[in-house]
Length: 220
Image (cartoon, rainbow, N blue to C red; front, side):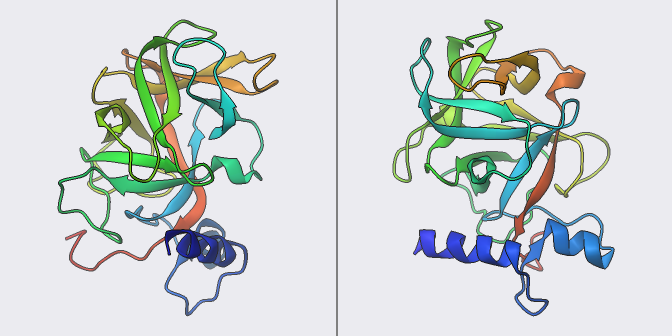
């Protein structure tokens, strides 16, 4: 059922019907709408502000550190391995369609492999910072998958094209990328890692995606 929903979501992203109830980034731009709110259950791409790469993963393990599924910064826009589903953490009251609020603890599930964006104290392969990987599956998730959403500025709810940081709960590292590129596991793609200092290189924006409509009561 879950896979059916996301197949439908991608279809809607490519061919949006104005009566569907879904909002895609491309449809919002065409209609002049700004500030599409990010909701739980939405499938989207995260763009690194400084380098414009997309947060990306694929079924290729790191050759060092944890050996878990690698996470990189992908330079292109059109790639299905760059979609992430916004999910609440277990034990909260947040549900599909609720707006994601500043300060919320969230999870990001890689749509294609079903693993969770994860971090821990293993060293990242290139820079030696905190490794960021993909881990688990639909029924296997832990606190290493938990990230705090921090909106830059005065916004209360997460919106498309809004500057945000994601801070890892267990390690306090910010999701980070830079122009250091892999030669082997993902040739030409950038390293993504965690770093505990606030820097210009750890700002991200919600870019392309399919955004579920907001539950009316969630953003009030």
